[in-house]
Image: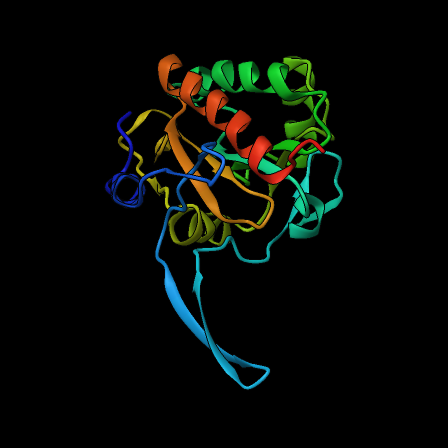
Length: 219
């Protein structure tokens, strides 16, 4: 499955922004998505700041039947994706690759994974719970959430810049992106990667290291 055109545009934005270097020469990841400029007055002076695309507040139900919101990812970086448990096409490849990410960072207190089902009618909390257990997951480190289908679709398209569409002609009845989205602790998107391609996930793993170093520098 190829990344959607919307995802491709996001990647182009990232390429245009490029990664830049800090004063000490360390690498820093780009910010993806639409950027705006905000001007405010502080102590009588006009200050202009760049405002980067931000994942909005959300509320879903996780695999433990507990409400899961943006507060539960507060202060953490995370990788998000969109899948469904009965997907016969790209999802098995995605979960194989996401397991690599999980194993690499499962002991890091600043990191987690957030998977959204795009088939909430079937993927109830108990189904997600069993699915995660079969993968051998720590549910606190890798959250799987369900909720209103249209809200999940809207969040994917407008916020995470990926798409999912009902299509009864396709295996599983849904066409969706295989993207993994890297989000920083301030809910800004810092990278989008094809989760079906091992080499792209290698890049994600490297970029997680960069983002951890940027946002949680060792003293």
